Length: 362
Image (cartoon, rainbow, N blue to C red):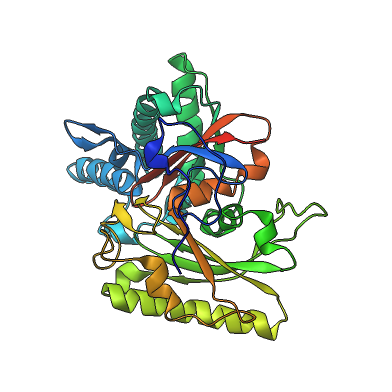
């Protein structure tokens, strides 16, 4: 089902903000916040600025330092390939008694923090990022000790440069934040009388689908929303085409819908989807979806319409699907924690560097 038009998207960040319309894909005006901008793609002579602070960038730095140590016969990983070096393994090396191993990890974290500092400085020069008071760092990496250290070191470097900005780790589990944020895409009346919604978080490596319990307060607020059940599919391992990916996501959703029905969880006929790239008001991915399986970009493909054909009705109603950028949705999970600031942003360290800037609405 396609969304109604009638509100601005983040692509028109310089224009005036109007009252929000209901159910607009990639909408700029949401119930709790205005999305000032998202999916900024800053460039320099080496390419996209954000690529310097992605998960791939971290691995590239680690690989470079391993090569340097191999020349002296001191690579603590020996012959272990890069793809087998996990965040948990690096965390263990930090606390090991081996000075070379711990020193290697600290060196990589320090260099990566320098790159993240450069990226943040560049973003804060943008008109749409000026006066940002806090930046939430999300993505899977922040759930590790190396991610925490990188964020802490970045904060120190920014302070040394005289840049007044607070960095904070995302409060929800990074693997669940992109699902929880979906409850802030639609106004509370849409979900009134229901226990939960469906949510999908599509990334360049994984797809997560879940049932998010609203845990609404007396005034309909959803500050305590939490993931009830979720499934994860690492699509990068299977390398499906686009149709196969849609069918797999739909099958995961149908399984959760059946489970919720069995457990008497009253689902709202609504689903929020976070997806990489710039999303237009009709639900098309205009750009930024290059890491998704198959060709998802352009007006010829509509994710909401493609999924709808594989999903059942809920209580006699078609499931209304609302799509937004994945960094925006992950950032929305922090809405309850951002009441003490006015302007805040999110940067998600993943396959690329997702980004969004918000201003709270009264």
